[in-house]
Image 1 (tube, rainbow, N blue to C red):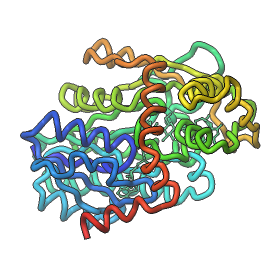
Image 2 (tube, helix red, strand yellow):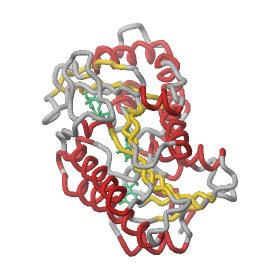
Image 3 (spheres, rainbow, N blue to C red):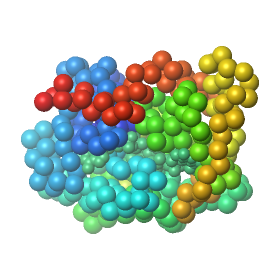
Length: 348
Ligand code: NAD
Ligand code: DAU
């Protein structure tokens, strides 16, 4: 199997690449990433010398480049994670989300279709998507299932929804073997410190304000990133072609409760007095169009493929905080931009 993983220098992609490179030594893994601000090869430097791993600096918005890579590397399978992923950035610059998420995904589908010449034997296109395509839930007990109607509300989620539709269109029109998964909020090591958990860990370390959007009552369903990578592994190998699988942590937190927990655990770990970090909480203007609540019903994945989350949140958040406290250099490098030097040293 020659497997192309896109976005493997990013947060989730780096965990997926590590899992596949180490668990499947007989697969050749090609990590294709354009190394945007979110791509950091330091995330996978522990495995980048392994013989079944190679890296290509490539841009999914460049159709000819995708054609060349898929042909030259004789790619049989794709796990597609490359994306613009931050909702706040999509509010200030929606068009880059259309280019990367919608056009980039369409380019990859088209390049695979051409290379595979409609001979689908042994081929698979796995598209990694998000629960945000389903829209926003009320503060009740409802959950997103695989049949919940799409109702994306931010430029980010609309561009991801569009990419999901293109993947299904290639399945229905050309019979390309595809699978899609829609996952809830991830957390864990290598998470870029623009997203809630790593941003707040970094700000607590540096005693900077913790900007809570709106009332802080919005709810997210958090999953440890390695559990997501394991779910992708299970779905890639056992999922039914043409199907969608929801992935979630059964782990809902209001932002403000999560932030207070983060403050408490970090005060303990940093030897600060209880309540010190909570004083950094600062309520700020709400995110435009802020989705109120996400919650995933992952029972299809559990019942059909036997996947369940392995880590309790208390353990996962403690491991995550420890990782950031033990990797202050990583944090410093990504906040001052010097992490992008790693590529130049290794690959240019
Ligand atoms: P990320 O922003 O950390 O990483 C994205 C990666 O894609 C980066 O390495 C970046 O360099 C690369 N990339 C961006 N544009 C590219 C282009 N034009 N060509 C090639 N590479 C490009 O994102 P993430 O949080 O790891 O998310 C990965 C995927 O999982 C995304 O598709 C996202 O929608 C989805 N997802 C994320 C979450 C989450 O909580 N983070 C949850 C569910 C689904
Ligand atoms: O649900 C899956 C999605 O989760 C993924 O598809 C996205 O790629 C990922 O970024 C994430 O989206 P969110 O918008 O939920 O994540 P974010 O970390 O940006 O915000 C989480 C919550 O915290 C959200 O309600 C907004 C709030 N927030 C966020 C930031 C960055 C704040 O209150 N303050 C902040 O500074």
